[in-house]
Image (cartoon, rainbow, N blue to C red):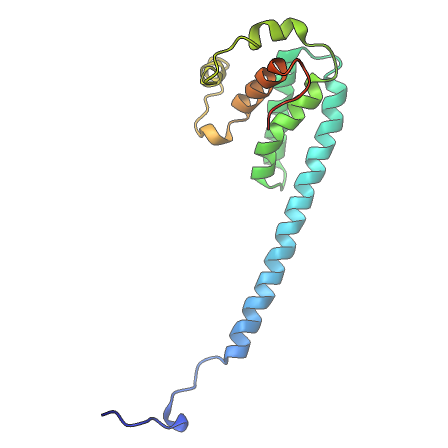
Length: 159
């Protein structure tokens, strides 16, 4: 049978629980504010990109839109932005570029691509843009957006 330990006999030399919880709360708030700031900067960069792509699409062909979207994504990586937002927005940027004018000529080829979509990796590889991480490949996302745009009769891009 164990004997009860008196509160005076317990070692209480460590930090108080209120200090530990208070510190955790302060850190949570700081990281939350920093994360929101980074997300807001990312969204502003995406919005600027949409305006730029609306204008660029008027003069670029479909391949030019792909180049512009890849360049935009590279700029997004260079800024203090959220990479997930940048990766997801490539298709949105492509849509804004493509919708700026009729793409019927380019869509003749892209609307007939195989359904599996693996052709995009080969195409990017041929451009010298090998997709190491297939989930975060701006080149592949841009080509998928073009294919989707053509398959929807130039109405939308599947996100």
